[in-house]
Image 1 (cartoon, rainbow, N blue to C red):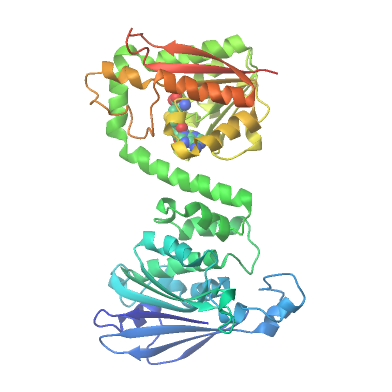
Image 2: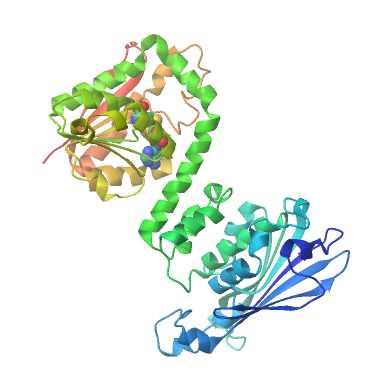
Length: 467
Ligand code: SAH
């Protein structure tokens, strides 16, 4: 298996400094599953190519019981592992080019952050998902991708092509980024790993994915394949990646946050919303309450005051918000009698989660409009099909009322992170269909001052489980 990296920026041999490998020497490096060799087929001022040749020891592989891709007995001896780019190559990259991947270069630190015109060639890369998938992985990261495929057997054209490709990737980039992308995405394309995947691998993915993975359009499948389809790990990865995005949104959002606050102050809408939700909780007689997307805990504080509630749980995808909620309710200072009934946890409304089940009531206050419409269906199942609390109280803006706010430009939403805002009819149609599907009864309420043409600023749906 051969990986080559070419630099064409003069003096091209700077590549040697970055890789910590002298272009004049061929080096042999021992790895647990074989040997790696680094050499430079060309090293001139104009062009310099470093090659990593991986020589996997197939007998050692069987003895060490690593690398078997299927479970058949013959498969131990006859498989493609020694000849293709796979997780073995990622391990070799980390071992042989570890300092370069971490961005360390003692002799020429200036090179670490220099973007170089780099070309990567992989002699054989299994692309499970084909060339299209290969492109979907690398093109969003700015690579030009070329791939040559091979027939399974040239005598039997009708068998079609194999999963193997010779791949060329080009990008003007720092070397550390290119090595990191290869490290993560090669096993993703191969859809396999030769070692046990646990929590440490999740941390590894998040560390290696820092700065690019959270924005990658294929992040879900990357996480799933990288974590060897361990569903709970992949879900944690996604939740944390989403959290990264959210933190970004939160940081850049202050101006529009102020807009929302400014719109609401004269009406003190926030307080009215909390009051409306608390009164519905009290009517429901709920003793255990889950606040989904609790944010900074505005509602939790008031729920604590309600002596009839025995258990209050807040959940949010944003760790930062949960930390603020923790402080805001002064969790550490509360007497243990009260403290014991409150808990906060990190999660996502997009994924089925046992921790959401068994509550009398769930509150979803000003949260749905933050979810991407294509993913609403996932949320609906998580809450109505799996968690299915007896009562669900959900509030969301009424878009029609936006016309009443002079300082809100026409057509604009109240908050830059809102993915949509529903009219009264749209909300009722959505809620009614859901209620029918999952056997709930609905009632609708207004929150805030009512205009005869546009209704109230907020709308609230209360769902009661019919059984
Ligand atoms: N309910 C709170 C916060 C509303 S802001 C209140 O009314 O004050 C919306 C909240 O939804 C944010 O805290 C955001 O982090 C959270 N959120 C967005 N997407 C989420 C998801 N997929 N899972 C859980 N929480 C989410």
